Length: 247
Image 1 (spheres, rainbow, N blue to C red):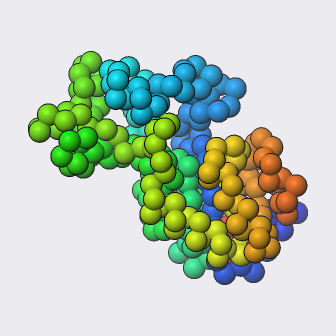
Image 2 (cartoon, helix red, strand yellow):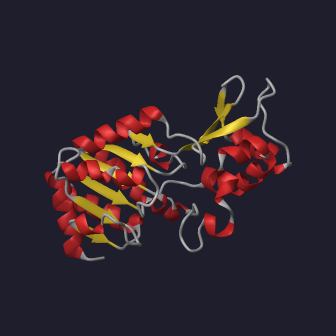
Image 3 (cartoon, helix red, strand yellow):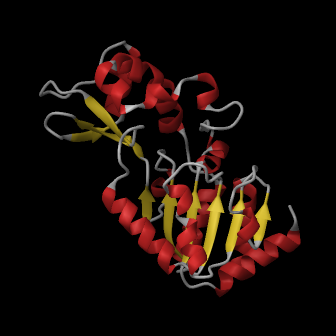
């Protein structure tokens, strides 16, 4: 890692009063969760149509056959040092919000309080008929046995994730946009910023002149506006930046 860039990023966060973190699939990879859009990601092996609302409604068995291995990875995953570092930054009063594109809820598991899950979570599921919400752990065994996971009322249990063709959760969307408008420093961690509308959120921070730090292996459209760019593993870079910020 570049120590000068780490120090610079640390100074940015040190001066800020309202830091916002925008996190993507790169945050989950050190925890063993596969990403979606890299060369060996989920969509290189499977069609995105499998994760559509249409597929869930018309061919739920196909949907759950696709989802099962991903859910097993996620439910077995543990937070990594990047998650812990963000929790430390929040506890110090610097980090005011985490806007995440991830569905693993590892942010919450590590103790982060203000988390806006833009694409939902695989930790819970809701009955499509009676709207009862249950732990997603209850889905795994029926899916393994080739059955559709069902509520006692007979309705299918749908994981609380945002599928293609679905709108983002409204309350999380509004809160995320408000946080971006207020932030005086933005940390982008593990996101290539290609999935809208979340990819457009940093534009709100730019309007306020908020300095931007990017930790991501691949290029993003935001690179030309960033003060710091680190092509590093988030599990190494984020703890180093937070340590520099909190000295």
